Length: 311
Image: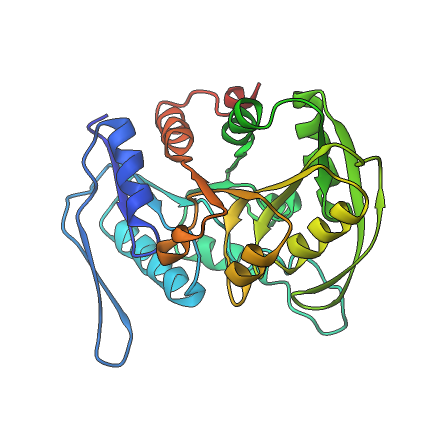
């Protein structure tokens, strides 16, 4: 794999290092600094002429800084004559605005897709998109990975039998149904209406949760308002134990405080987003997706099947 190089910005260097360790290759050398006015300055130290390059950079908070780092890295690599540049976005930011729900509203998921394409991205590798149709916003190949294999392995080992998989909203039913099928578990849905951004109101639960171990399943947890309210509703309806699984741990604002006070006994997340000091929360358990991303990168490089990872 001498013609494969992996670079990273400041978003999640630890994940990039884990991926490189899995692939047994060194991390590419690039210096990312700031000019005095805050502009991003990128210096690529390695020769990438004719090389298959992957840039690991989730667009996590601070989203705008990390997105600009990614775009400038891409531009620098293309101008350095890289053979192909693949953007590896374990977490795809701005994905929640994927359609017009109000008049005069932007579609930021499409805007980010256009920015990446304009910067010279040849291919996108991402994980658990907020909405699967975002793949259609690109006119380049998109490899969409799922954290399901990592999550399912942990759930089977930890939570035992009598499980009900709970989708916190109608949009996550397909994901929850897939998990329930793999676990031979039942399925429940929470009827939720969002009254404002980051503000949700739980109405009722569709399905049987009384006396069962309920596992709330979502693609991301931001302020944890939905999870906390959903857990409270599950407890009122007789759930014996309440756990939660979420791929992307944004955990902004009062999220940690809400999680600590909630009925949730454990929140299982992945390291697509670095947690920093938040990792000290006693209810958090972090799983690594580095081997999954590393295997996908290897298969893309050697032009092998990526979808067979999830068969």
